[in-house]
Every structure is written in C-alpha cells, then in structure tokens.
Length: 68
Image: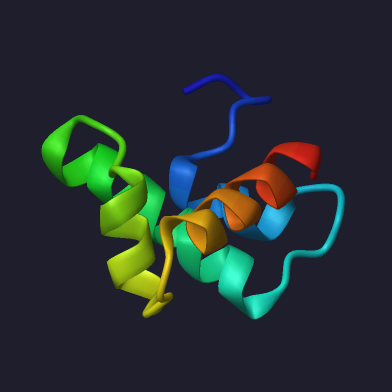
C-alpha cells in the first residue's frame, strides 16, 4: 500500500467525523465481510449484526456513515 493509503481496519478510526459506537460496529462488520467473503453484507445481515428490528435502521446507519 502507498504511503497515503489507509488499511481497511484503520479506516474506522481515521474518518474525519467521529463515529458513534453503533456506526463503528456497522463499519467494522462491513469491512470484515468484505475481507472475509469479498462482498459487502446485505442490509438484512447488517440489521442482524446490530440487533435492529428493521432494515430501515441499518439503512439509517449506512446513510450516516456515507455523510461522514
């Protein structure tokens, strides 16, 4: 990796805006899924990871991560 390229595991701690604990949990889950399976998790998988009742909650967390 180049000098300016962050490792995926460092990404969660190097984003410009601080993340909430739940956002960090979602981001770590996404990065682990990409690393282990080569694909991003579905909204249902993210929902299950965070223990949310609806996929809308997972979507809300993803939108917040996109803004940050």
